[in-house]
Image (cartoon, rainbow, N blue to C red; front, side, top):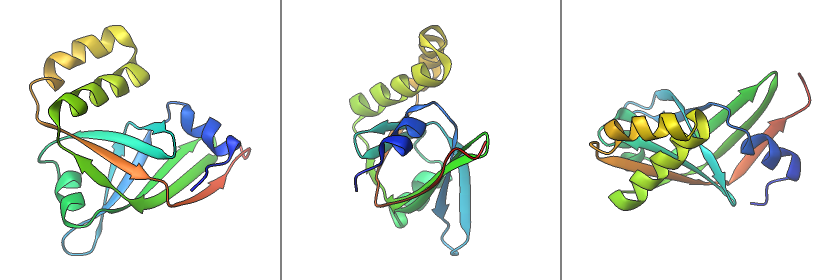
Length: 134
């Protein structure tokens, strides 16, 4: 799906997002995540073994909500997981720089590099946006 320039500009800002996955009993699990728009996909990253990763391996359907100052974008689609550690470590470093800056990211990598990481890629299937509300 092609994302409008206004939605793209909003997503390129480092807002926090709320990722919703589906628990085994059908209820919704939500987690605040860092993300980055890459082309027409959203990239996220998590430590292996977390509930969102387990849920996505069982059922990859997700909803991602991003809100800032009254503006919001909701994205839905089907995620895919990447386990290659060279890729996942580069992705978490990229996200840490985006949200916390290079110096802090370097310090955080001391911890992240010891973790088995998983990258979540969400091709944008549907978008709902309400912008310029704030």
